[in-house]
Length: 33
Image (tube, rainbow, N blue to C red):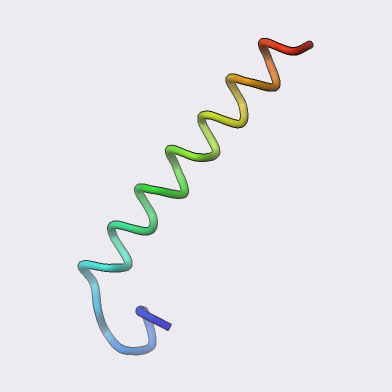
């Protein structure tokens, strides 16, 4: 939705948030294996 509204600030924030969450999931998965 933010992309469609040309809201680049929100797109960048969400992109960074998603990257952080994916990294956290990867680290927890590695730890639990």
